[in-house]
Image (cartoon, rainbow, N blue to C red; front, side):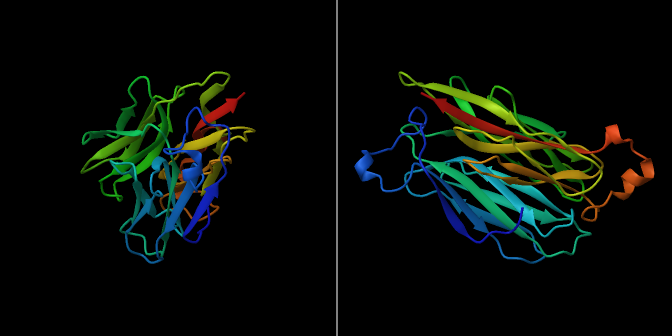
Length: 294
């Protein structure tokens, strides 16, 4: 994932009338029903926080973001949809042993809907795992997290929707002094109009394995529909999730890095341990998708 200028990408409208509908008559809605909004920070060694907002009369349905320029020593700490779902915040902090200049990109998928989505949050201050679940009959189209812990001691290694798109799991590995760890689910009511079949499902990418860092794992291609939230899980010594790139009409990509790893090289701990190929670190990407057919 490379740095991109501050921009607004307009996404064309598809056959999603069962999920997305204008809040006013069509003639009064000049903009597309779905857009991808993006903001980027400046580049230096300081902690970064970027806020990206949706256009008027639209809501946040998914949050993405990533770190540019890090060699594994800068960690994502927040992909947080606002309580009113009009904006989202993406944050990253460098470890105390990192002196590299970096930037942060923040993304949101925004949509106009007759019924507003809702945000569900769930927080723990104990341990490294937390879930947030959408109440019936809603489904989860987007998700996020916030980790208010020292990045020298804690790192995000899971932000993953379940197969039913009902809940999201957040996991942080680490030890020592804790702090709040929060999971967020963006929930929406989906109804099927006469003659339409809506296929809601969790998409999965092919796992990317091996000892080299960073890793990029992309969702499998699709022919119809949308991709909303993008999540992932990563394993391996020092590994952490460093990016989630949203592509509503595309595949979506997650990136993972490892603390102390040089780009394209093994981490020293893996070399020393003689980790077997079957035990190599692995990155798997997940996405919340809607396919529609008439």
